[in-house]
Amino acid sequence: MSFAATAGRLWEGDILPALHDYIAIPNLSPAFEPDWAGKGHMADAVELVRSWCAARPIEGLTVEVHELEGRTPVVVVDVPAAGAAAGADPGDTVLLYGHLDKQPPMAGWLEGLGPWTPVRRDERLYGRGGADDGYAAFASLAAIEAVRAEGASHARCVLVIEASEESGSPDLPAHVDALDGRLGSPSLVVCLDSGCATFDRLWATTSLRGLAGVTLTVRVLDEGVHSGYAGGVVPSSFRLLRQLLDRVEDAATGVLLLPELHVDIPPDRVAQLTATATELGGPGASFPLVPGLVPSHADDPAAGLLARTWRPALAYIGADGLPPTGLAGNVLRPSTTLGLSFRLPPTADPDAATAAIERVLTADPPQGAEVTVERDHAAAGWAAPSFAPWLAQALDKASQAAWGRSSATIGEGGSIPFMAMLGERFPDAQFVVTGVLGPGTNAHGPNEYLHVPYATALTGAVAHILTAHAGR
Image (cartoon, rainbow, N blue to C red):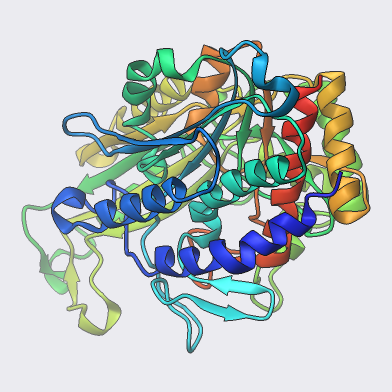
């Protein structure tokens, strides 16, 4: 069956206009906008998604905004089974997932572009959240429409669009508990919040890294002091902080030093990533590197992919106590604070990792400085179960139909906390975790864009998978 025509019509006529409106809403995730309820942007984004879904011509469709006191809302769309699957067990569900909250705007957008300014340039739709992950609600329902337009079958589908994913999904478990009877027993989970290594085939994500975030502060004074008086006597908070960082990271190699942050990598994952690296090369070439920069593992593509997916890594994502250089007086500052984001292997225990980080950084403070570690967030990673034969075949057929190439697998370096929770709650479910975050799409950074032809083709591919699931 060909679902491409319906997918293309819906994208150009219905989805892209809605995505333009969605991008224009500065709906920051709660971690970045504590007053999300008062600002009203969350309500605007939820209503946009709700009303679009409710207007779809899908017989039997119901849409609800599920709300819990003090938590971000969740949009729940319920679509009854169709075709030959209409008489099947209604508890046999396909659970589709996406989110509508966004990362902060970030600086560095190119001239004519901006986070809340949707701009279509050829194949790309620029703006914050279009690719990560605003398109998911629209594409999921479009895939269901494509199945029905062809007279094909799909099982009951429940679409869950949350609003706190970019904050680590703190609100979603409570919603899932409250909705437990509504979700049935999903035998297939489809998540469109991941990525693709190229735009010429279907990529299935086999793993996602976990996360441990902390804020580290070193304080040496109650107030700043003239550096001519204090320099050489009062230790620099920055220098002492550097010493602490050397306890967790090898500054020369970037290798993290705590055993709690490492796991044994399954041999089959090593083999898969090695095969992918043989075709694609290493991941370094996909980043906007400054001229002359040599990425880690540049001479070993397989090691580069393993480092991005199954090994821990540390990013320094924020700093306090450091004034802008143009405004910096000649002062020995009282404190330095860094935001540390540890990406963890898929099967690492985030709580044990966070405890180890906290223990090592606070033990025996250098020169008796005041050292504090504040836990920000922790999230488990996820490793996909092996594909059932029907799903492996469906992925290849869907990829061939949409792009003329077989599907491929890859691990991702990011996190989708909901996947770990679903994997634990529904251990027998099959997972299709995929998405449009391909080369240069730059989710979370400036100039984020959605590759429209790929998103359109992916919608048709999801329709193929839904049909295969109904006939398995």
